[in-house]
Length: 115
Length: 115
DNA sequence: TCAATGTTTCAAACATCATTGAAACGTAGA
DNA sequence: TCTACGTTTCAATGATGTTTGAAACATTGA
Image (cartoon, rainbow over the protein chains, first blue to last red):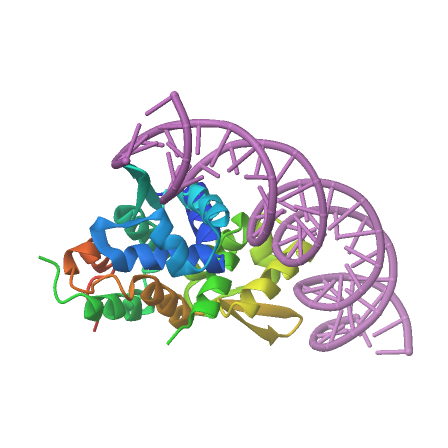
């Protein structure tokens, strides 16, 4: 269960153009993730700058790193992204389910069906 | 459909302790929202500081304002919050539905059933 | 019209974040 | 062991964000 401090850190991490691009690129890359070098190219930042942002995202728990030979492979931390969404919407249904139903509907159409 | 710039602004707005509290308090307040004065008390910031943060949230499209006598009533912008969540998860299912299913499941249990 | 209330604006001080280039680090292959 | 490669660390700079208190603004009721 995510607490307020973690959520603030996560949102702050996502509230930066390059970092948001990094996360989205990793999300679309799927569980295999992507090496730092490829990420830098995809996002359009210098290696130095990418490293800075990855450290930030890592601190926020939004990505994970794993060395692989000379490269370092980064992956989106899917469970933490889910937890973040949960946190934001957690309280919204208190007595008023209609309020967050649109969000649920939107996400449901994104994925065929939870198995 | 939310674009990258809007999403960055929204996440940055949420990535600050006081602003996140403001939004969550407004989310739990439901469609009736809350007057600025009550918000300031609930969140624990000065009126001046609250005003600064509300302007930021307003710029990001996350809250709306409406004057009501001497007070100004603020409300969470539910559609924009939904859009933000959609944006974050939009691409995650490309060939890999299992990746964002947990997020969908989490939100589904939060709300009984979308009508 | 005056005073009281609720909120915002402004300017100043302070704190935090992003970017850059050079240097260092770890790994792999010759 | 040497060199090349991929990545991170460091220090310096510039840019942004946050907080504060005083003043201004809008609305209401006397």
